[in-house]
Figure 1: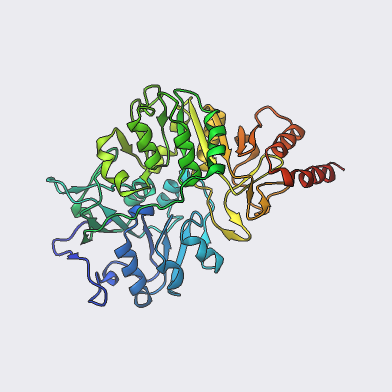
Figure 2: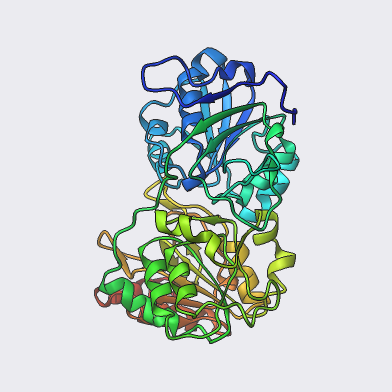
Length: 430
């Protein structure tokens, strides 16, 4: 990683049609690997600059996570190869058109993959908070894999966003660690999800019945996870240790439900790698005991094994009659990821309290409980799942035989699919 030169450029965001925001050819070489932050922490002006200039720079391999940048789907230059750990956000369109290279991996393995240069890591593009009086900046709402990748980058380029909140939990970075800095003043991107419906709320009520007072919860993002968080409002002393947090977590903190008082580690703290939600969530992060940690902490097996009360709550595309979970591929397209699902599910099932997979019983007319995984990819092994939940109930799998698992899963399938599932089970047994 290079230091910040005395004459390194520090510029203000350029208007559309004006001169380039930044001459990236000074920092990115042909054949380089580039990574950048995801979600609301994505440095969109720098990514756009890369898209504008990569044709002149030469071939570049890029790694990113969740992105909402539509240019990555409709204007992807031939010189740019995009890698990711899954097909999140606009990346699913890239997958649909055969332009996304997926690197299947546990989220906990990303730090090691950057360290061994198994992932592109010559140049890092980051969005950071304004510097403090000591000249240091925060990674704000997106610490996660970025904090682990930074030490292995040859060159760092920053978007210093006046509206990126400074967050606690991870060491700040000297501004002079960046080879170039672009100044912006824009609201970080927010996550827009549909309001939970009656099906989401029915599933959430079943999930909430499996969570005990004092448990430490991990949950994802989306309409169903939002419904689950809302369904936990009658609990007490819950803890949060999760890859990301949303507005629903903030609501539970304000309601006094999330206190972290019984957590085995990080007592009293909400621990996360990222925030993904509304502008209100971003603006109020500093009002609460929330610490942002890198993936090497939030997802580390050694850390998760200390949370004996851990309950993981994850979503899926489908679950087969063995209890195997598919959360990555639908109809040949990557629309999900392994992500942290296995990290948390395995820890919750093995050394924690309970591993839960929650999903709607039907999607696009197809049963989510299926004889075999249609996507042909097992995300989470059957032995790492304690319970599968749909709007029709809970299938407890721990200690159940293969035959018992199948019967319990069929019982929570959509009623009009159960006969066919029974027939498939009989055919497999024949």
